[in-house]
Length: 132
Image 1 (cartoon, rainbow, N blue to C red):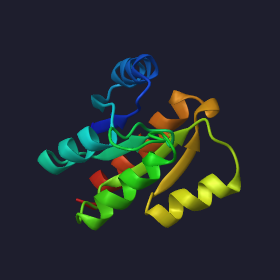
Image 2 (cartoon, helix red, strand yellow; image 1 turned 180 degrees about the vertical axis):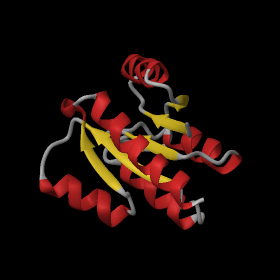
Image 3 (cartoon, one colour; image 1 turned 60 degrees about the horizontal axis):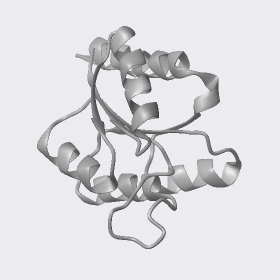
């Protein structure tokens, strides 16, 4: 199973999601800020990066406004092509479109459940295995 970088500034939610993914068979590392996520993604190769939209940025006045999209944009500018999944409570086509424009590969709402995220991660993992 591939290793996942899970990014969410809500520590409690992030830990619960990481624990659930661990139970479902995934190795998970967590990051809680845009900066720590970029730093971690530069140091290690992941099978996927899963981020919340509403992500804290340490140096901005409105620190949470869409920083998950900014994370994906930065990763792409750095040449990091790891599969990026936006996993969020935000609803609407405007957020889905923003995720795609930022370079995200997938957009999932959290209310569909962590199991649906796991299925998506496994499906891609199985495709990669079959291609080897």
